[in-house]
Figure 1 (cartoon, rainbow, N blue to C red):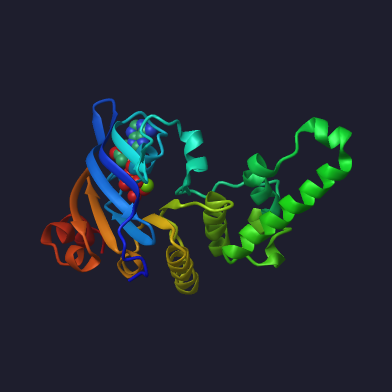
Figure 2: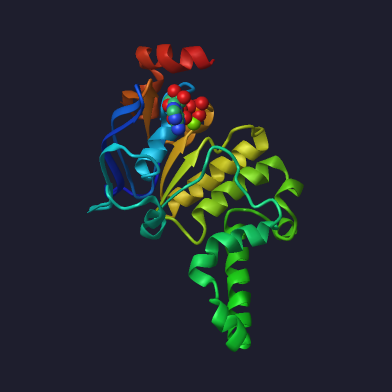
Length: 260
Ligand SMILES: Nc1ncnc2c1ncn2[C@@H]1O[C@H](COP(=O)(O)OP(=O)(O)OP(=O)(O)O)[C@@H](O)[C@H]1O
Ligand SMILES: [Mg+2]
């Protein structure tokens, strides 16, 4: 359980719906996640979990409403949501393969710390100073997520798979999200990496971040989630505390039974 008892929804979605032609990939999905809280989203393959993130972050056309805090952001385009504190990691790792780990982080931080070309030419000292500061910030952002300096100057293909998954989270978080959406962060992870991931999620939560975690690993989701939403065929079939979800026959039937 976390230290934030005062309920402050940082992200709320209401009645989200997405159709792909005749397929209703998502229908009537509503949830909220508070500051310092972890919301788990579970459901079988094709249930609509990733679509739910696409809908929340306005990467697809959808029905329903979305708020960040008390600001309605339904009509705000996807590329402007990160600046409002809402960021997501994707189900598949997506890195610049020809950039080092540090350069990958620099690339996502560039918007706030990059130098325009005229400055690089006319004011080389200031450009150089800015570059140093940006590199320092990138290093800090990587270290904060537990990616040690020995990996900063190598390429993504050269770091262990578990660290690649962490890098995905680090790049999504960049210089700090208020709300972070993770899509199967534990996919393919073994025991030790899984424990490190749990510790990372808990530490972000304890700092006051609101996290939403899609995950098939029941042990992980049951241990980190404050509440869970269960999707099946695009619809919410249940929501509640891990204890409640674990004991619902319709959840066991729709998901836990089949996935076991
Ligand atoms: N761009 C798209 N065009 C058409 N159908 C899509 C598209 N994206 C997703 N779908 C369909 O929508 C449904 C939900 O897909 P989604 O990827 O959200 O499921 P998921 O719960 O994330 O599954 P998984 O656990 O396999 O990642 C599936 O039937 C999928 O085939
Ligand atoms: Mg998915």
